[in-house]
Length: 221
Image 1 (cartoon, rainbow, N blue to C red):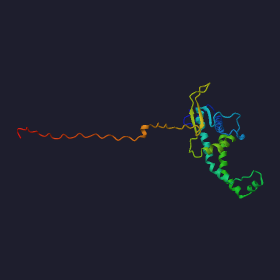
Image 2 (tube, helix red, strand yellow):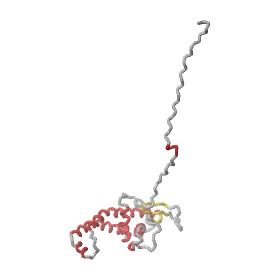
Image 3 (cartoon, helix red, strand yellow):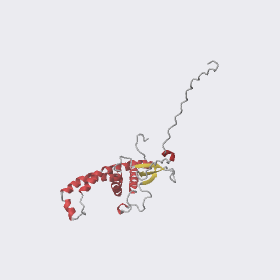
Image 4 (cartoon, rainbow, N blue to C red):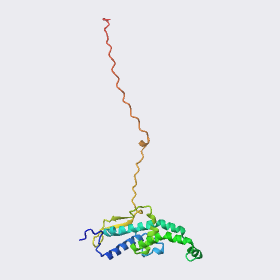
């Protein structure tokens, strides 16, 4: 009995399960890679939709916390990366200007500033196991979610089951690209709305009946 055991087994032993989650998380992150840059071309074919993978709903719910954790680690290292970029030299590595910078105190400050970023990259590399996925995570995905407090991914259930075993499929994707925007329909303007409303007509009060004068006959006068 698996009482008080957190998570899903997914029909695999622990080592196989960790490898599965790593591969799914790396596959989701690599869909955001720039296909024009040869450094990120790990797969021969481009993804059908950037920032989205299709898998079973159980796997999607299990890999989602791993992706969220990696994005949070990368996002928290951005201030240190910007501080180190201000201290980095503009010269090419191995040039005379770079060697002069390497032997100066500025390099020591850069080394201290870049240390949190290096630590964060190593943590994500331990979780993902893919250097290209880590590069895409820190260079493209983390800056996009810098101002977002959390909830970087969403899971959407698909209606059509998987062929073969009728497994329930789901989409795991990053938010912010295909978000639904509620559009308020504007009320059509009519001519009657432009005109000022007419003042209500006052009802005339009924006149009071005047007292009738008694007419006396002519003979009595």
